Length: 262
Image (cartoon, rainbow, N blue to C red; front, top):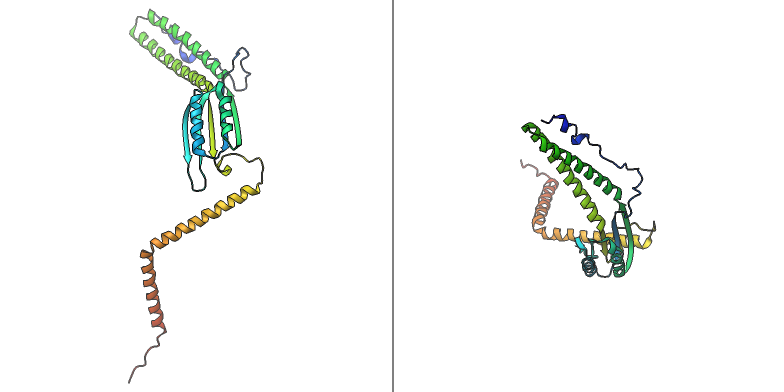
């Protein structure tokens, strides 16, 4: 017979899990650091659609894939963006290819996030849970009462659920570290690219912005006049009737009353 305390004392809630605090130093015994790399580029190009297709094809050529791709075609200029993932060891080659397509590299940003400690910490939790699971399996083999068996099975299911979830987190970290994410913005006009200008005041940019605003306002006014012209069959008769009524009322008020004949 197995006492309840034999497995209740080993409950998962009482297991001491290793934890790495945000301010703690990185693990010194790890040789190969696991770094997640994300890059953003803004490129001025002569042909947005053509270069967008070339970038996606190059990502596949390097062993990566396209995550999403968009293109906008306003009347002034064409712009678009694409997000791809490429193997981390091919990232420099891919970025060099993208720079070669540009008339001008407007901005470029590469960020790395070291997830080694997070991976090691999660793996330590998995190892602890695996050992606890083995202990519960030993208890289950010796249990002879139905309530004891059911309770140990519930604990095993709970532990396995935690193990699967933590393994999924580590698998995600491994995959994102192996495949770097690159987001590239393309435009034929530099003003359509999302970037922070190096100069605070740029007269040429202000002039282009003002011209675009003027053209946009003119188009809106032109659209308004077109709408008014189309709907003139509705509002014009109403205005004419209103004017006629107003003139008649004015005429009646100006006509002096006729004297009565005696």
